[in-house]
Length: 453
Ligand SMILES: [Cu+2]
Image (cartoon, rainbow, N blue to C red; front, side):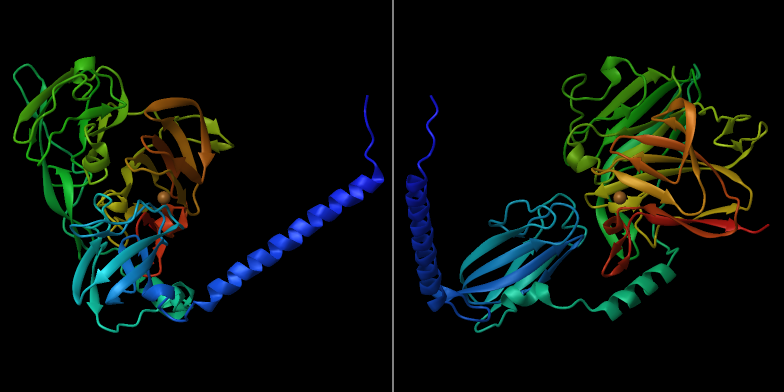
């Protein structure tokens, strides 16, 4: 049987709740009041602990790099787009901090001198995330106010201008160079690779310790014909073991390159031979599988193509007729990465060092996106549609037009473009922090330069 609430009892209940709420409010007020009595302004908090702020981004450490002696709580904020940390050389550091998040780094009993700090995410130190904190008696920090300063918009305007006008910038080294095979007596195509840590200029003046095949990023491009016997010799001059996985390429299991599952680890200083028959068409990649989070993102990735992708010649798709006698004027691989020492890049280079693609008005070109990074990248070309005709090397029964193609890690998209209009047309990842920072345009952006014939 249901019992109705007595109205009188309800009023009493409500009153008790109200009294508890009021008591709680005053208790809270008292605590806040007591606490605020002990606070100070500026960079020093209660208890003689100073405060400071440091910001992490791709790829810089900024903020209060001069600290007072004694105890300092440093609020470390990641204002970048990927995970970072702040580690004291030879000591402790913050946990990995996600984009937009903060951690407090508690520094105690600081003495006059210097402390080296860096980001311990592989490759980030080499990319510029290293700095020196100077500890000095009586140093004044901006404290909690550092992040609230108005950005220097005029300086950003200038940096955007200067970086764009610097395109295309010269840098040492070109990736993706076609690797010529040695043809053995039985017709086998033999390729030689050496894995090593080598200097690589990602953008003008930024030379990093890259993990490379044959000293280039991306590694040398391998292209074979359908039915070819392929033999790849790898010499490991890295300071650790490695292997090679043939991504999107049909191989016997013991050639799949997954140590120690399908083969032994290729130890430092050792060499190894991969052999298989190129028996299926492929728009593939090759990269380390072992410790890929170090080796791949720092540069050990490359393209591997078997045969040619059939282009939908003679078809009308979305009202656009693809000529039956269509000739391809250029074939552009665009290997994207976003991590490690290389960072946001197309073919191992960051803008303004990315390569411009120069074609003539009316040309049909093929581009293939390969994602060897850790994030998806929506690749957008201004002005022209991109006809997606193959995904991961599989020809599509129904090719489709798009102007922005989201390329996830491990994916490849092959697209056909007609450069119908003359001009310099920007071609870039549309995640804006992958192409712009306060210091100017950088990263995953280039241009299709269409010349008026
Ligand atoms: Cu991106």
